[in-house]
Image (cartoon, rainbow, N blue to C red):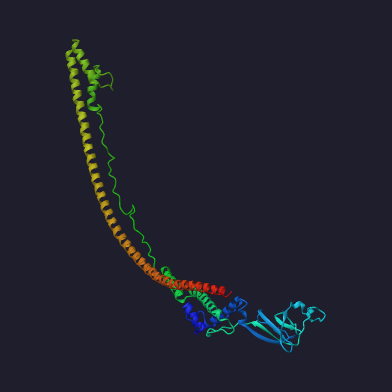
Amino acid sequence: MATFEVQVEGLTSLTIDGSSAPTQDELTQFLTDGAKEVINSLPPNLLPLCASSNTFTSGSADTLVTGKILNVFRNDGDINQPCRKIQPRQKGRVSDPEDMAYATITDPVYYIDNNSLDVLPSGGSCSYSAVAYPSVAYGASAITAFPNEAEHLVVLYGAVKSLQNVLGNKTVSLNNSDAISVALTAINTELDKIVTDVHVPVAPAINTISYTDVTAPSKAAIDGNVPTYTKPVFTGASSFYLTEMEAGTIGDAASDIDAEHWFSIAGQLIEDNEDVELASAHLQKISTFINAYQVDIQNELNEFNKENAKYQANIQAEMAKHNSDLQVAIANGNKNMEKLVSDNSGKIQKYSNELQSYQAQIGKLVQSAQGYGNEVQSRLQVHTAQYSWYEKQQAKLQADYDKGLQALS
C-alpha cells in the first residue's frame, strides 16, 4: 500500500521532501493532527478501535493524557470489577463504610481529579481503556489502533493542510521572490537613471533685434525756409505818383490807393467840361502808377519764384537723402535679420537635436523598465495560476473531508 506521503502527493500534485513546502516533518504533523481530529469526530461505536489499556494501583492516581476514558476496572482478586464514575467531591463519602455510596471491592468507583484518574477502594490492581491519539509518520502506510474506514480522512486532512501550507508559502514567496525583487529593483534603477544619467537639454537664449541694431533714417527737413509772397507796398520811387495824385484830390488818404476812384474822378472832370488837359494829365499819372505797380508786383513774383525754386530744390535734396538713409536702414535691417535667423536657426537645431537625444535615452530606459515590468507580470501570472489551482483543489479536498466525517456518524 502506498505511503501517506505518496497518497498526499497524488491528491495535491505536490512533491514533498525535506525542504519542500510543506516539508516531510510538517506533513507528519498534519497527519497526526488529522488523526486526532478524526478520532474526536468518531461515533461512540468506533472509539474502542482507538483505545489502549493502562494499568495502575488504586490509591496511586494515574496521570491522564486524554479525556476520553471508556472503561475502568478494579480486580477483586478473582475478576475485574467494573467501576462506576463519581464526582471528585464524593471521594470522601464513598470511603465511609456508613455511607450508602460506600465503595467496595465488588462495587468500586473511579473519579478524575486534577488530570489524574484514581479508583476506590485503594490498594487494588486497576486498568482502564483510554482513547489514544497516534502519531502518524509521512512514510507510514497504516495507522495502528485506528478504524480503517476513517483512515482515508487522515490522508484528506493532510492533503488539505499541505495545500494550505503551499498557499501561504506562495504568498510569502511572492512577497520575497528573488526574481520579482530583482526585476522591481531593476525597474527602479532604470527609472532613476532618467534623473541621474540623462542630461536635460537647456533651451538656448534666442537673439533679438533691438532698436539700436538698425539706425533709423533721418527725417527730411522740409519744414523750414518756406517762401512767402508779399504784396507790394508803394514807397520809395513810386511814392511821388501817389503824392501828386493826392495833391490833385485823386486819392482820399495816403493809405487809400483806389485806382477805380481815381478813374471816376478823371472821367467826371471831362464830363463836366472842366479842364480836359488836367484830366488827361491825371490819366497819364494813373497809367504811370499802374505801370510802376505792375513792375513792383512782377519783382515780388520773381523774388517769390526764386525763393520757391530754392525751397523745392531743398525738398528734393532732403527727400533724396531720406530715401538713401531709408535704403541703408532696410539693407542693414535685412542683414541683421539674416544673421539673426542664421544664429538662432543653429541654436534651435542644436537644441532640437539634444531634445531628440534626450527623448531617445528616456525611451530606452522606459522600454527597459517596461521589459522588467513585463517579466514581473509574467511571473505574477504564473504565481496566480498556481495559487488559483491550489486554492480550488484545497476547497475540493476540504469538501471531501467534511463529507467523509459526516458519513462516519
